[in-house]
Image (cartoon, rainbow, N blue to C red; front, side, top):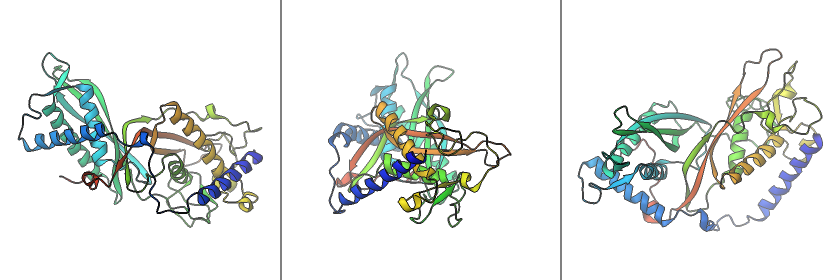
Length: 364
């Protein structure tokens, strides 16, 4: 196992050297891949529905939307594209997350499986207002809406309307800022680094930050990220025993590819509870490099998952600590959940894009 950890550390060092050598001119504007750029059709759709929502808010209906019908799937598409485009801080980084849900209704066209654009726009505005209330209720100075999920929750009892479930994903708290001299973090969330100079952040926050840095990199200069069709996953990496490493013994050191799920063990020791970070070969010879191992193994698992699901992009990763008050012969456990979707890049050099995203606190 130690040999595997050393190889991972060496790979990190080599990749860092390559990264530095290939990025001498940080002021050069990178051109995103064509398939990452938001299509003109997407931008036209968003602007059309933004206009419909504005008209619905003022009550000044026009022929542009009056009487026009769309399918329910189309309405959900416009909701998703527009709200995530306008209010989603998809590439912002936060310490924690808060997930909340609101419900809105869209009146069905009698005898048809369609809705009026005006009714869809009214429901969209109601969704924004309800999410704004959820945002305002979060007792954090640092917070933003990162993304939304829209789901058909079925018909009302009278079968005359559709209920839309809107799941808001809010990022909260300032993200972790790892110190280059740190050698490890304590095993559970909201704890501290191993020399107790950084408080309120543990190994879960460190790993989340690094995984997003690798798997969801920031956009090129003059572009911003919008993530649509967001999916939440609480199950794929829930059972760590599906991701056993070929270690020769269950000794609680990197036994699983998923972060630090351990067998029952007693007694607990500082070496077990503090996950080491090895920045170079000198520290690698002094500490067990669990953090490097988990970062490498979880990166591989997520990369494969995202590729298998259509080259999606990560929006959030959350590693929740379980059994923080460790009983004798207890289990150190974490549960990994995440959100992912379709990544689009928006060119901020276009005048109409300069003001977005807006914080959802704005009542424009």
